[in-house]
Length: 98
Length: 419
Image 1 (cartoon, rainbow over the protein chains, first blue to last red):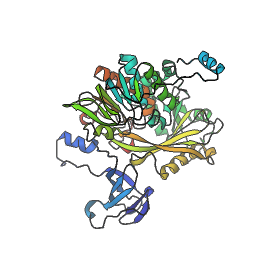
Image 2: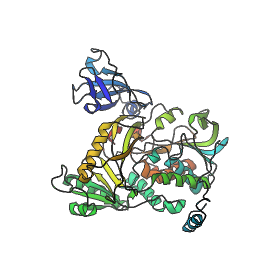
Image 3: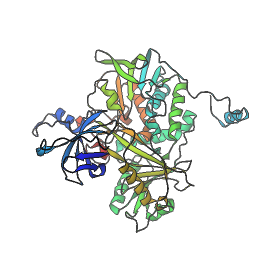
């Protein structure tokens, strides 16, 4: 599996670490609603098919990326930058190499 | 047909032409059952068997998407052990161990359960002390555990590198002598045969496509072979729990599906007569009766429903095997495959009633599904039949994440890939 890092280009899976589901939403930090904290910390949709997820390019630019990947085929649909720089580089697809 | 030395001798004289089917081949389910078990893996079949045997509920169907023995029950590394730290896990898996010890006799089917011992290696004094703590927890719960020093380990596993020159020198180990391995296909076939002979219907190639509701109550399943109604429905489809339970209205569960790879080498003369785990990484290795080394390691580490993984883990696991057993360096792999794990958020399983009436959940088995097969089926059968969990699975609740009663054996936190 390869990820097309918006900063570094095509790099092998070994350079990245997986950081989990990118679709979970967080309650405000002072929220005392145990239900929404339980959902955030423990409950996952776990879809079979397209999945939005965080990866970090730890052995490269160290940026956090949002990747859309199919969990049934491991093919990558889209790689975007997460965090304050989101949207500054165009999302990349990775059709060339898997 | 009863299996015995006598029946074997009789069949030998007749050229082995008189053996009958191990379980009935049923094409169509009936229209109504008392209990439907979704998932014909080890856990589902064991559940049906114990429903019939322990609770007298024989009007039961096991509904399986593929064929018996084609899922995770045939994709594991066949290790059986009960060497846990937390008492809730210890008691549950030890009950499983006792069922394993009587399984071949109980099922009249040779599951080739071999109590060859499970040895966890420690590579530092601190790790050995951690094992001492776990060993003591086991012994308090009546489970066998022995702490070995380096010399005892060296005598027990002669081919292993226990020298000071190793990258992670072996300091000792924790041995569970009653642990070992079993033939996984035989476990599935044995439970299928046992359940079938008590009247359970096993329907293969019958994928569940949805659930039948009457109001909020679940009253059956919709399958590719038509709707089947039931008083109670138990779901035991670890690996695909999120997928199947989504059809029953569970949008989210405390589970992620991950791929775990396993490997078998070309056959060797007898080399490793126990189950060894490497403590400075994650490797478990044993030798099958055919001579192949059966081993595995970590998850690939990302959500996956694909029954195949990627090459970095292959290299990682193979390098650990060679670190531990340098004489394997030129050994070739014969087969390798991936299985999809229900990785729960705390690393422990779920056997519980669900919030929806009529629906029962057996899920979240992480790495530990195979060894749990008999105890899981036994407890799930009790939970379904009595409509309440048994003491042994009372801690494996679905709502424990909300109530803060998680069972995090390794203290890894709510990160499924780390359990």
